[in-house]
Amino acid sequence: MSENAKYHHYYLLISFLIITFAQNKMLVADIAIYTLTSGLHDEQAVEAATKEFLNGLNVEFVFRGNDFADYGSHALELIYVRTGGTEGLFKELLPELQRKKSGPLYLLTSGKSNSLAASMEIMSFLRQQGLEGEIIHGDAVYICRRIMLLRQVETARQQLQGCRLGIIGEPSDWLISSRTDADIVRQKTGIELVKIPMDELLMTISVTPQREVSEKAPTEAIRQALPGAQQIHEALRIIVTRHKLQGLTLRCFDLLTSVRNTGCLALAQLNAEGIAAGCEGDVPALLSMMIAKTLVGVGGFQANPASIDPETGEMVFAHCTIGLNMVERYELDTHFESGIGVGIRGYMKPGPVTIFKVSGDMTRHFIAEGELLRCEAKADLCRTQMVIRLNDKRQTGYFLTEPIGNHHIILPGNLKEILMKVL
Image 1 (cartoon, one colour):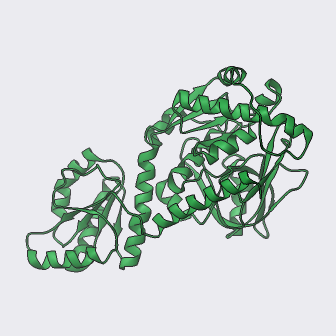
Image 2 (cartoon, rainbow, N blue to C red; image 1 turned 180 degrees about the vertical axis):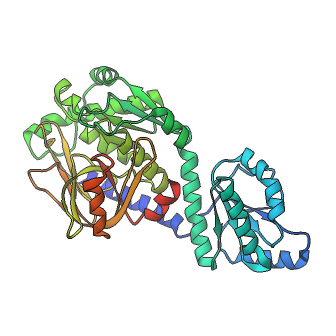
Image 3 (tube, rainbow, N blue to C red; image 1 turned 135 degrees about the vertical axis):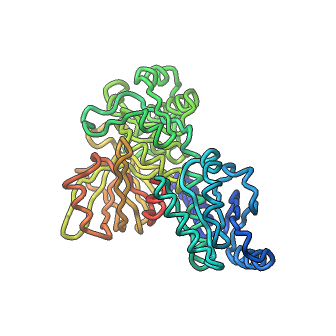
């Protein structure tokens, strides 16, 4: 393994440990718990039950009691329904809660003193008002896990607000179904789509000096292409800074004729650096990557299915770039279709994966869990190739009858639960 590959391997390992640490309920911050309590119940008994219940959750939080003054200022807020008879109190409180924070309301209950029954009545009332919410109830282990998941989801929602994603050049001509309405995206996610002319990137490339590259190349053609590929990366970094972007998608095939190179290496590096970076100007794919990145720390592998076996659930996904923080090792090759520039053949560790895609109007999504069986290196496909078997082979039918475009996002791990919660 090269030094560069080792670096990215360690980067991925550290990122994975941080995310796992959080998901395992060990890392908790900025969770607030408020209370609803009926005056008919004995205060001392309620306080004792509260202390026992909350101490058993193994969750760090700030306890606000019945003071909702700072509601809306935390990553996650839970309303602890401590007793029955609190439905009227909640109804009076609801307009204030809605003024301070939009989104789902989360009711925490131990089940004691008719608190679960009251929570169910409140949840029914919320549904009648067209509002979303959830009752968090169960044993301590379940409640703790659920709180951590919801904290991740709410943090992701906040991070998406005001997020700026660049569209460099128009979407590729063949993406006839992958159009996006910027106003709808902003309304539903808080993401701002920023259009950037391809000419701006080309001008930035032209004034960005080429530098020597220490990366080892397998062929003379790739060795000669590497400085230009790195030049594209540096130019994109300038664009990111100039427009204050958190992600971008690039009409990359234009680079084949304009600078006789590819954006594959640049996009692979940007993703490893924390910038969600997609190909071909595919905005729905970029939105999917950005949602995933805010949730689990990695934007994923943008790829299209190359083959599908409906009887076994096995699929092959391929593309010429992948985030270098997603792979155990990688090799340099040319771009598949053109045979020029620098492409990436990445090898991700076999194991559980999730396939994810949202539509450009955010009205549809697809999520499927599966197993990455192996990565391949066939000469007649885009350079990074993954053989994935879906857990439910019936989901192959989606790709053949109602796909959301051709590109989909491959993510490491079983992530259906958390992705479903944020959509």
